Image (cartoon, rainbow, N blue to C red):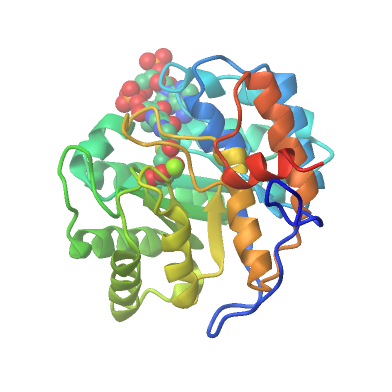
Length: 318
Ligand code: HMG
Ligand code: MG
């Protein structure tokens, strides 16, 4: 140990626990979910450099940007300029958010190969985020998913507000199951269960996963996407791992939030997740030191420290 409590190696001691996966795929969302919520507009060159640093740290998937209406999310209005700056990376590593056919056209024109549509399980958030009801949103996604699959693209379906909604309160599990089934029936390859406002707790996570399995949705098609508003994201992730989930969304340095859900704070920090996974002996392929450096570099640019506990601990280490 160093005097400030960080292990001298900057790595956790590896001690396995029963019944967990041996490998987890981290789906990095910092450049999209994180930067979409920044007050200041981050220059396109800085975004490109951040994404390159994340890829170099071994992140297998880095969600790069969104092809949404620029007035709805001005922070990502530079998608057309950014995506070509990532031409040296494999486009299958760089998913982009696409809400509708217009967004898909824009993404296809730049050579994107992996997209995500993003639905809501509650009417209030569907309206706030997409200007549609839940069913109208699903109807909007239908031609997008069909065309993307015809183009042999990988399609993720996000579901927001799976664990609670700031306008509607608790969200019935059956409501989540219905939208999950609908997105799978549209042809999504994988789903990501969003705790947009970070309200969920571990028992709730396991209960939802079990209900989805009962409804015929296999765990292999599910990822989890926890925001850390109430400090539950890591505990919720552990509960999902115990259930067999192997795809976990996280945001480098804990960047994040959602411009259309004001109570949402950052996502689970990727560094905190990697510290736990490596401590459990679970492979990620990620170099924690390089990842932390990428987050510190961006935090320096944003002018405030990263909220990630692991980034803070490692950056104070000599
Ligand atoms: P709308 O106003 O209903 O749009 O917005 P519309 O379909 O009526 O079209 C109006 C105009 O917008 C038209 O132009 C369209 O061409 C244009 P006009 O003919 O009037 O000149 N337009 C577009 N322009 C560029 N790109 C597009 C596009 N689409 C239409 N793709 C819309 C509907 C879906 C566009 C809007 O609501 C929108 O862009 N929403 C995006 C909101 C968003 O990105 N939120 C954050 C991501 S979700 C999230 O963070 C949650 C997540 O992390 C999981 C979790 O934590 O829960 C994923
Ligand atoms: Mg999110």
